[in-house]
Length: 432
Image 1 (cartoon, rainbow, N blue to C red):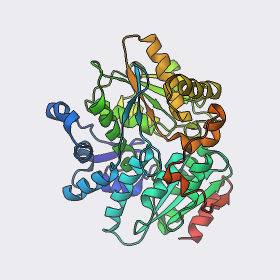
Image 2 (image 1 turned 180 degrees about the vertical axis):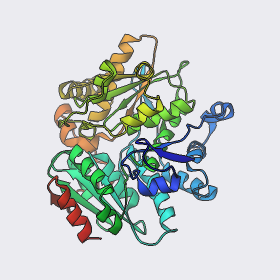
Image 3 (image 1 turned 90 degrees about the vertical axis):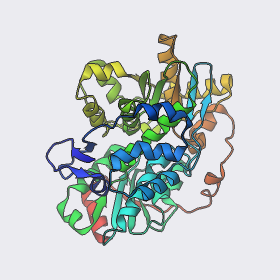
């Protein structure tokens, strides 16, 4: 499998090169030259496959011969070594819980897969690789956990000061070793722009071998297809489900659409956004206009210019009507998000995190207009990661999982920087 740049100004590369580079030299995102199709046998037997074998069969066509089969099977088994339960909330709405991994967030899947791929590739090269990643919340913790102690890899995480939850901040600032956190006095979009600038700075890239662990990296993005398949394994409806995805940078929804294009049965997708709604606005107008990010209580979705939306457009060959007929966009305010958390806890006994609440509301609204349909939404993080938001809404304490409890006595270590590329470059060159 080869990958081409969506800006079409760089040579095609294989999975290994795309993973190590993160982004093409022309600043374009890499995209696979073809979308593998699930065979009739695969779809027939899907519900009976174990998680590791299913993951291997989904990802192997994308990896090709870049990783030997035995190693890739081990990587897949380690990546998905936790549960992905589909839990019923009402007679028409279920949730796919993606918070049972080590950092209690869906990004554990992509981060664990990519870290193991990069660890494998680092054995074949001299010198260290620096993973440079921007986070709006969960990516930082998942990447920090996934890469902690990996030989030959340093991790530098940029996060917006005051705009991630306290638990998220502890997850990415307290590990030490090969993990460094840079606290940017700006927004996630500022962090993302700084990372993009770093990749095209020749002086910097000559001194440090840089790659990205954001969902712009194919090794982070593509394995997110796995859990859409795990949801289908557990789906009990007679018709395919409507799937609602809380969306910020649009890597997660993009991965679901890749699985759908490969043949996974899905009736419709719902892009559930907070007031950072560039994509829902596009789905209404046909014109994509980036916006400045606005802080919300669903902070991991505070993205005004989602990088991965160009991949969705590429997948649909820029056919607006096809995109609009496959995806419905929703914009959900903080007030509605809070009301949804409180109502679902009171009426159904289920505690949502703010991102899941956005998706629940969007799915509930969509199903209200399509009374014959049923569906599920992605609960992308454990509510405890947002206890400082959720507990005042429900007026109840959230029990602390052990993965969080161990963080509370650790010391935060971060380096404050302005949203200024010169400062980031100076830091990276000084620590090269």
